[in-house]
Amino acid sequence: MEKDIKEILITEEEIKEKVKKIGSEIASSYKGKDLNMIGITTGSIVFFADLIRDIPIPLRVDTMSVSSYGGSTESSGSVKLLSELKLKIENKNVIIVDDIFDTGNTLNNLIKELSKFNPKDIKTCVLLEKQERHLVDMRPDFVCFDVPNEFVVGYGLDYNEKYRNLPYIGILKEEVFRKKVWFKIKLNIVNKYFTK
Ligand code: IMP
Ligand code: MG
Picture (cartoon, rainbow, N blue to C red):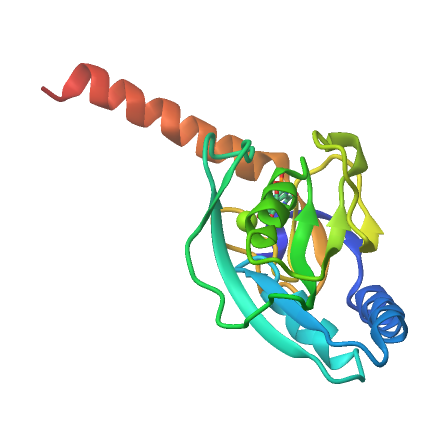
């Protein structure tokens, strides 16, 4: 697994320190208020589990599974909720927690969907933000790290469901992508010429 990583971008220690800092920022913003935190699975699970333990005020926790419509490498203009919220968020403060704000389509659309439940307020918190890639007119409210326009994995983030268990954020080697592209091309040729 480690051999597929080109470079460690953010170390385990740096993540720990920053998550603690964002946790105390959230705690001071919501002290004396209700707080409902919704983690988006699967990408945010590692970050979410650490973050909530760094927020030393009363809060409620829920998770949601979503999928974006459209292409497989880039999310599109709408999201589909794959699970229901157990928390009642009407007239409550909500923070949606995700792994990365890339184009921003997922969180932008999720805010629209969750607004239908009439919460008092919705904010967003992400581990990573790729500012170069934004396609929407919003920014996440709480951000741990800005990252360059590279495909990163680890600490919950995946490529093909792998690498989520790396304790750091790393840049994936290009040959790992290329291998997959070559495999697909070969598979297409075989399908086209050798099967009926
Ligand atoms: P957005 O809707 O374009 O902001 O995309 C958000 C989702 O795309 C994230 O929740 C990730 O699952 C995925 N994603 C975007 N960039 C990366 C990356 O560099 N590594 C792993 N997943 C990514
Ligand atoms: Mg993902």
